[in-house]
Image (cartoon, rainbow, N blue to C red; front, side, top):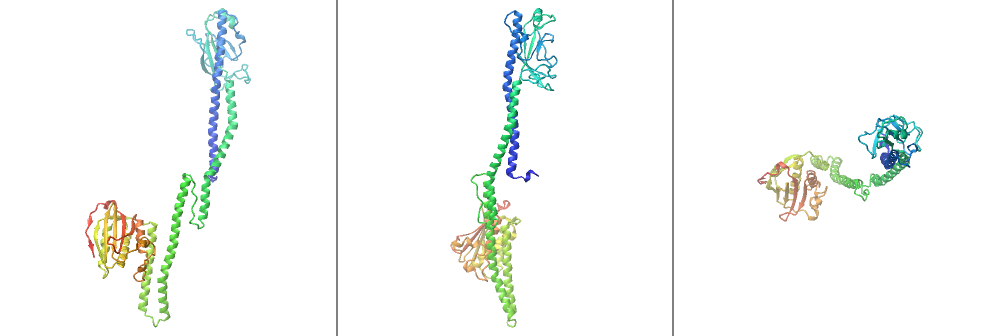
Length: 506
């Protein structure tokens, strides 16, 4: 919970510092071991040279050569010389019993070349130390704790006669035999170099580098979050009502840039929704004022002169205005629902709905002739209520403006159901073919209170078609006169292969 309350910059800095400590700590251990490994070969080469000098001293004494270095004066590396039976003949800075495995080589396989062997330490040394070692510590053997080991260079000598053994090693008298030489590899300098490197890196590099990385992470995170802060400040200003503004988009193509682009897209939709809402409220208020004013005026006049009022006519006019208000409210509610995309879709046979709507027009007296020369069978996704409202609005609009005939056709092409409603009326000017689908838009010849609608019929058609994944547009009529409206809806999979049905006429 404590880390969650920290800022993003602080958490990034802490995470970078922890990662740096772990990385540099492991690197320190690796570098220290690498430094030690660089020094160990030199120590082994020195021990091998000392073993060769010891073997040379023994061999010179065997052959009676002069000028050989005396064994008693040899002081470079800790060593031990073993008899064939494993007894220590001579040693320097080593005590019997300190190591396991110091055994003589078999006499039948003398080896004059050096061998490198590693043996476990049994206990700490008590002999005098080598150069720079602490008292009581054996070079290369550390503290002699459990699991510690020491490295030796092992050589064998030639056969030494008994009298020579007495002169070299002292009494008692022994038979002629080979001697085995063990010289310890003094890795004191390697350990010191490794410890020095670990101390320098561990006490200075790791903390300093980790602090530097944390500061860099703090600075870089601040730079990375600067566009986010700019977006936040702009959103704060937009939240005050400046919906026309947009957040700044950083030049990169990272997640922050995509966030800014998505935010601007959302703001554009929000601005459009707010604008449409304000326009809807203004247009609805304007449309409602006229019938309300007329209704109020007729009722006030009747109440002011009740003896002169024709109450049946007053009530009939009031009822007509009330019905108009109710239809307007229903259209506004349906339009809002279609824009919210909350319809539950099902498979609907569109050709049956078209046939029913065309047949209903035959029951109405007067008016233009309505016929459907072609009805292909087509099933679409939607609801019967919404699709029926689309057909009713299109037919009502066509019948209202037609001179004598309305033609309806339904065709299936390229996986879409194409519904066409054409009339032979005055038509729609090319400049108004897109504007007629806006809310509360009526052309001049449709503004009559009795014949003209509220201007929501075609807006509802576009809203419903859009909510069902379709489109609606006004096109140039094929006959050259009148108006022609085309609605396209996606055909459901189950109804894509149906055959055309017969014509329906009124």
